Length: 143
Image 1 (cartoon, rainbow, N blue to C red):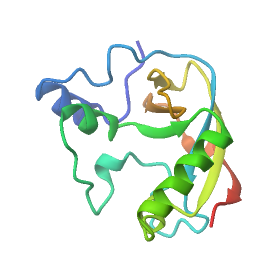
Image 2 (image 1 turned 135 degrees about the vertical axis):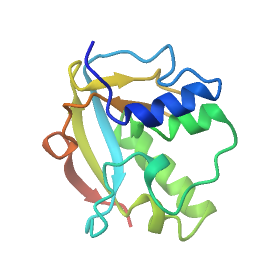
Image 3 (image 1 turned 30 degrees about the vertical axis):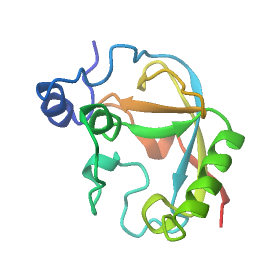
Image 4 (image 1 turned 45 degrees about the vertical axis):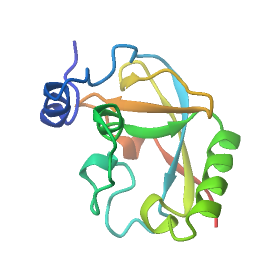
C-alpha cells in the first residue's frame, strides 16, 4: 500500500482512540471542490486544517481526524451552499477558509476519501506522492 502523507499526524490521532483515516475511507475516482484563497500568499490552500495556524478548536478525535484530511465537496452546488451558510453565520470566516473555489479530479492513486455526508462533504487523505497543485485549479471567487 502507498504511504499516506502526514503519516505522523495520522498516527498521533489514531493513538488517541480514533482510526485515522476512518475505516470507511477508500481509493476511488471523484470530483473535488475545495475552498481556497485566490491569492494564496501563506501557501495554505491545500494543507489540512490540523496543521494550519490559527488552530481550529476541535471537539473530539473524529473531528481531529477529519482535520488531517483535505475538506472537499462532491459538487459545486454543495460547496457554494456550505460556503454561503458559513459566511452568513461567521462574517469573517473567509479569512480562514478562503474566498474562492477550486476544482479537481481525485484518482484512486492519489489517496483515500471518506463517505460523502448529507451536505456533499468528504475528507481526502493524500498519499505521499500526491501533488495537489497538479490536481486542483482555480474555478471562481465566492465573495
